[in-house]
Every structure is written in structure tokens, then in C-alpha cells.
Amino acid sequence: MIVSNLEILPNVRILRHIGLVQGSSVRSKHVGRDIMAGVKNIFGGELEGYTELLQESREEATERMILQANQIGANAVLNVRYSTSSIAAGAAEIFVYGTAVEIENSKEDSSSTPGGALPA
Amino acid sequence: MIEIGLFFVFLACGFIFGQLAEKRHFKRIIEREKTANQLPAVASKYPPETGCYQQQLVAGNVVVASDYFKSFTAGLISIFGGKVTPFESLLDRGRREAILRMKDQAMAMEAELVFNVKLETTRIATGRVGAIEVLAYGTALIPGSKLDNRQDAHAV
Image (cartoon, rainbow over all chains, first blue to last red; front, side, top):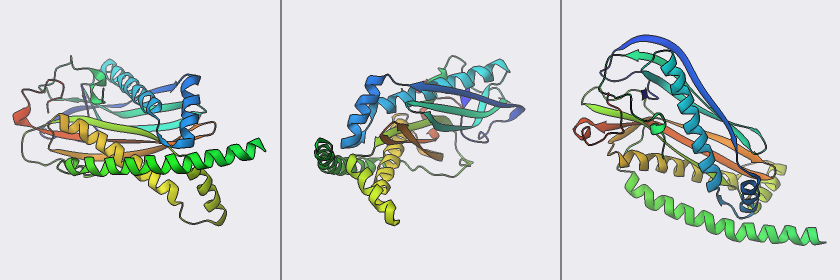
């Protein structure tokens, strides 16, 4: 599955446009993390716990989007966009969406990990 | 009385540690940008027409917190209006860090160019916590000759 934030792929023909696919994930950290973040807020600096949390949920949202794309017979998702909103205290929603398309046979293998597009 | 004392303690902590952390962070960012500048990241949508490339979505994110002193001064500034410099530097730090992380990922794949870069900023609010998350993502172009030894990148 090719996941790309391009609208076109160089040298690849798009055979069929299938439609919009999306994935979302709402996550929060346990209270301990929130308290630690509160303390860190006095001193400033990076909140590693939250960085990690948002990264994990982004991976999950991407996986869900890829699952949806697979189900409707797409082999690539183009023009992928991410959006984040903090919906309540301690919880954030990650939303990812893109256009599912069928592209000409490429060298990609389907065994590549869905979340591989994001940093491990 | 205790509350007022605590307020000043927090303010002092925020001022001392916050400034220190910011200075150190900027120093680290500038240091890393020297090497990262070899890899251009552009906002252009269209990839180069020529050459055989492989592409891969790369992303970097960071959550940076404001400190007590920053939040307090920002509150003061907003009474009179004007440039809220404490938050400007916070956002700048977040953006540059996110781009650097994205580039780190691209450089690990021996990419030559990152294009169609998008930046996204969100306020993360948990009670009294004032923090922002910045996400930078884009498409990394990996030259075709390096295609064989990269298993995890998708071929075009």
C-alpha cells in the first residue's frame, strides 16, 4: 500500500479513483502522565509522554485508513492529510484522510507495514 | 499567603528553568540544522519530472510546553495587546524541532529531497497545561539507485 501526501505519483498511472478513506483515533494518557505534564508546565520543555502518545495514535489512525482502503480494493492512498484536535481535557483526536486509488502495478509489496510511514 | 508564595516560586522556577531550557533547545536546534540543511524540504506539490525516485511519507512531531513565566507574561501582554513574544519563540521551537525530526527520518532513508511539506499546529489542553503539538509531514524522495537496499520504502 502506497501512502503519500502527493496528488500524483511520478511515472505511475492512476487507473481508478475510488473515493475518500479516513481513519481516526482518540487517545489519552493515564492520570500520572497528566500530572507529570502539569509539573513540566511550570518549567517548560518537551512533553515526551504526549509526543509519544500522539505519534502512537497517528500510527493507529493511519492503519485504520489503510484497512479501509484495502477493503474497497485500493492499492494506494494519495493526498493524505493529518489533522489533530484536542477534544477534551487529556484527550486528542487524530484524524487522517486521503483519496483511495488504484494504480498501475508497481514494485511495492503488500507485506510492508501499514504504520511504516510514520516514525517508529 | 502560601498561595502568593507559591506563585512567586513557580514564577521564578519558570523564569530560570524555562529560559535555560529554551536557550539549550535553540542551541541544539541550530546545531542540528547545520547538518539537516543539506536535505532541502520544500512546500512544492510537484516532484521533479526527471530521475527514478522512490517515495515515502515521512513525519516528525513534537509537543512543547509553555512554562509558568511564559504563560504569566503572555497574560500580561494580552491585557495591553501586542506581540506575544514568549509564545512566538515557543511555536518557532516546536516547528523547527518537528521539521528536524521529519528530516532525520528522511535522512535515515538516504532521501535527497522532501517535498510537499505540511505543518500543523494544535493546542493540547489538559486542565492547566498549556502545550502545543507540531506535526511536520512530507514526501521523501529516495534516489532509485538506493532502491535495492531499502526494503521498507515503497517503490514508485
